Amino acid sequence: MQTIFIFLFAKYVKYIDPLDDSRRVYSGTDYPLFQDVHLMIFVGFGFLMAFLKRYGFSAVSVNLLLSAFVIQFAMLLRGFLTVAFEETGLFSIGIPEMISAESSCAAVLITMGVLLGRLTPVQFLLLAFFETLLNVVVEHFVFNYLHVNDSGRSLSVHTFGAYFGLAAALVGHKKNVMEMDEHGGIHHSDLFSMIGTLLLWVFFPSFNAAIQEPEDARHRAIMNTYLAMASSTVTTFMISSCVDTLGRFNMIHIQSSTLAGGVAIGN
Image 1 (spheres, one colour):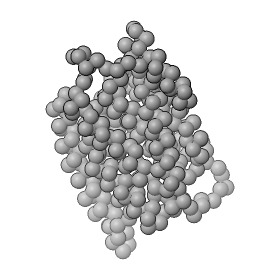
Image 2 (cartoon, one colour):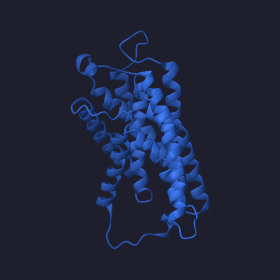
Image 3 (tube, helix red, strand yellow):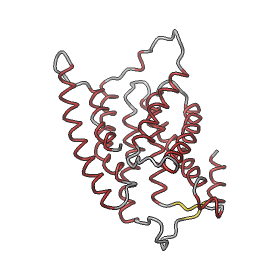
Image 4 (cartoon, rainbow, N blue to C red):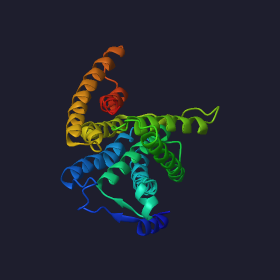
């Protein structure tokens, strides 16, 4: 598969022309945002998936494998759907295309969180292949034909990844199979997962702002996400304590619900 990717990139891809005013070539502002999103995908999601005590190494390593695969595949798929490719047989790539590829990674990694501990790495790769293919096609149809405004990618990333994972889990579910104890968490696995949550929390404003245009929209996305994350975090701690009989915080609530503000702003 990697050999095929190398061939396709060599034959059909060219670098973006920095003198082309019709394209976004804001390397000064795009690249710092890309770095933040890149860190979210490879480190934030990697640690977040380490919540299972028997699958910590698998979570981090498979996260790296799937991300590296999806980045290349998503860039090629999006390029093949561009008008430039239809007209010239070539398409350009730049930092905006890299950011869009990272968003496809996020959808696949959300699905991975649903199925972690149930699939082998090869099965995860097959799942990533079909999910990325479907995700890019659906995204292209929704944006270019239905003209849906999903600038924060809440629909095409968060919702798509969650429901795709649930559907895959439903299809692969085996009846009369008891849940094994290794699917639970322990102290250090919850701690690593919390580190992932903190990384996602810190860089979530960049994720929502990375593909916004113009710069004013980016500024609003950063500010709104920043405030929404703070609000959802305070609310999560309050509700988590209230629903516990002893008034304790539940780490499962903290690891996931504190990020809800960033997801909501993406709508």
